[in-house]
Amino acid sequence: ESYGASSSSAAQCEDFSGVISIAGPSSLDSRGVHYRYSSTQRHGQKIIIRAVMNGDHRNYSGLVVGRKRYAVRLEWVEDESSKAGVASATQHATQDLDADFIVGGYSSGLTEISSAQADADFKVMVAPGACSPSAIVGNNTFGLLPPCGSYHVNPILAIVQAAEA
Image (cartoon, rainbow, N blue to C red; front, side, top):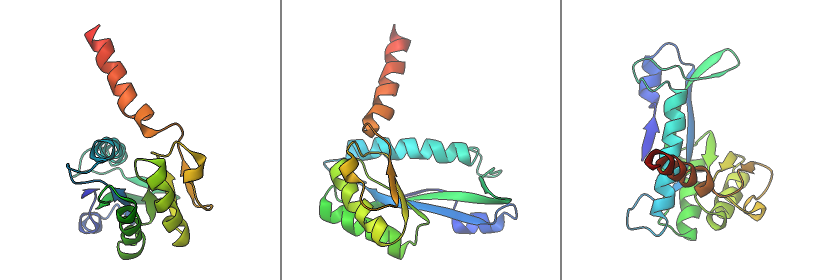
């Protein structure tokens, strides 16, 4: 599954110097054990990319690095809600998709696996789902603590509760 600019749409827009590709493992199958967490995380990532790209696919603002403007694309690789699947999905993201950056999964145990692969392939990775420092392997991964549920689900529930009050 992917979201954001494609290489061809960015190439057609003379305002962009290229596409920054972010990829990583995700449970895409609704029958997967970790689908709910993964889906929530993907939704949050889409909101961020939409904000960066200004939400209008005909008139991107993009991400400015130095004096150059880049489109942003997220790509998620099915990880089958398993350690072996996360290892394979992260390797596919780093080596086959040649993502510029890696986004970690939805749990510390699985993030540890993707962090090790990102480090081995010299890719910078953000780990929004890690709640334990042990999930971060090497020097190329940084995380957000506590777990992503505290950033995604809890605030939404608080807004709903406030609206219902």
